[in-house]
Image 1: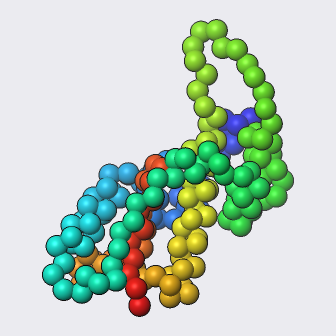
Image 2: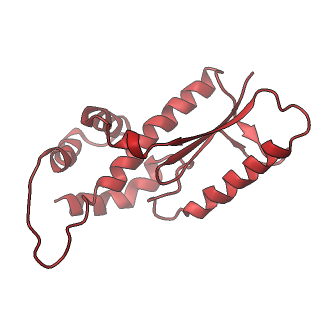
Length: 165
């Protein structure tokens, strides 16, 4: 059942996950965010004036993901607009425990794991957008003509770029 749900999720992930996330989303390449991060870090490092108030913070979410509560994940999925019955089915796949023995190979992780990770990252992206709307932090630009960026997500890393008002 988890594999069926994962295959269905794969189809819609690009519509419900922030463009700042490049891992595990079909049609997006993690190398795009690597290049963007490099450009922004290079710009911040070599900026000659106006350095005050700019920042880049890298957060490792790998350990945090191990401590996420299921009700948090469930609420994020609901906020993204998924049907409540579908969410209940998905949560049943990840919250019920079962043990099995595989004789001819090693059992890999739950196929829903990457998607659950994306949902957690989406929660953090939403909080970042709220901070920008509340003028707590502002986006940064690598140049006058470049897009503004507030954060980038990689597999289990989150880089927050920001400045003060």
